[in-house]
Image 1 (spheres, protein in one colour):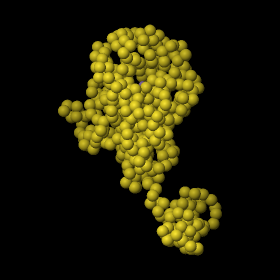
Image 2 (image 1 turned 180 degrees about the vertical axis):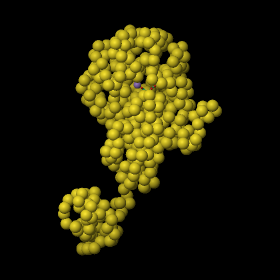
Image 3 (image 1 turned 135 degrees about the horizontal axis):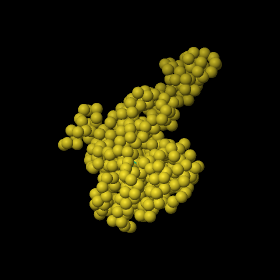
Length: 447
Ligand SMILES: O=C(O)C[C@H]1C=CC(=O)O1
Ligand SMILES: [Mn+2]
């Protein structure tokens, strides 16, 4: 039918007319004969060369009202972090986020973000590969496509590029933002409507030093900003890591929930010792203790210890979620939009978790406020996040790129209100941090 519709649209003037017409919509009721191009006939059927149609709406009007994707720009912003963020595989001193700006033929626009951690050390996509995948493959595939057709856009992106989930997620996010703005509704509304106004937000202690982490945690509790802490471990020996977690838990007592993220650093043997030690010192949850592909090891750890086991890197979208759920390889899913391949697929991961009785947690790739706002929109439509969220990405950065920053208060983060993602980029900040504007990170950090 697409070929026929296109042929109809190309038709300049009707060749046959009959009957009365509405003077306000003179095309309606017209009979038109169109020549079906040989190319279209070859593609869709072998029917006659000419077809006659009765116009039921004004085709030129309808064509004008369907917004098309006209432009997609992707660029990197390098924003320094407030302190070194020590993970098992890298130490971050800046976050390199990919921002997408999408423009449609009706003048509407959308913003998206695709962000990873530590260059290529966290996962198979880097900031540079995300920009390259969008510029070279995804954007050209989407040019001229209907901007309302997000499922179709995702299918097209899948057809043109395997994997590259974060790149696809960034573009999909911008399409949701644009659609919400066009309709005057929030992205949460497009996903069924907001159930909660705000949600609990954890903070990651990852200075690399126990005393510094304790001071930082005490400040966060005093400010009423966070009382859930995720400790990054896996770089040191298991025994040292357990002692580090034990010191922090002993210092904070019951005023805080303590969890750890090993970021895949342990072998199964390490993990057995680690989980035993962690639960003995009062740690409540361990995230991705072993490599993502070791699903059997995750299943063994899940069934063998009281401490909750959370899957993070193991969850690259709905297929992984189904496999993890059916193999009982996690107590909790850390659901991330970018890692899932977009909002729709993250929602699928949520549904699979819910269906399997797996608890949920809103995860982050340490995005700027753009990706964080998208997560807030999506997760506000989920009734129960048993382990809360870690949507603190903007707070780890020295600067915010929105005109109005997100609100963190009383240990919670609020869902931004307004159409689309509910946010506005600050153009001066974007200009300042854009890598392709030739301002080097060192110059920024040295100021
Ligand atoms: O969870 C991860 O692996 C990545 C990220 C999320 C919070 C944080 O500190 O690091
Ligand atoms: Mn993690």
